[in-house]
Length: 163
Image 1: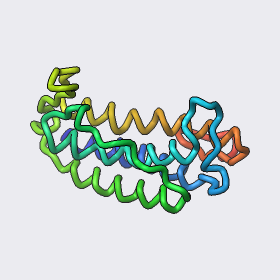
Image 2: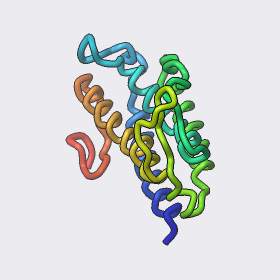
Image 3: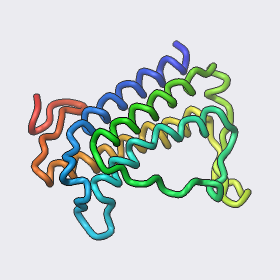
Image 4: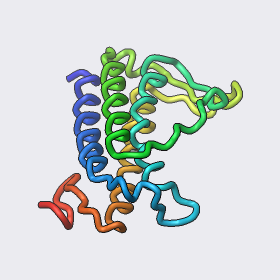
């Protein structure tokens, strides 16, 4: 089995679970945050919706310099806007995933001001920065929803709300 097939299966599974969670966003709670230093629910959902956009920088390039990073994305103000962002970013990511095993195994480097921070196979960076990062923030968002009495969908198995 080609790496592409493995990574696509994982990506599709995790992004499907992420979309199901984003579908639960309550428009009237997007400004809520659990702590003064935490992101708002809308800010977290916007970040989660944008993470797949990082795929092209990883899969189509050899490196990225953090000093060239764009400013944080403006927070979306409705569930429908977050879902539109997420759907567009996952489509873009999926298009960038059409790579050979050699391309997936190519070295990718993260830099800061021209200095190497780390270098790893592109597939490892993609799985970490896009897939695992999405899973991490999806976990945070599920807690935000729970704290606001919004039913949490089943993700890897039944939730307290769904079997």
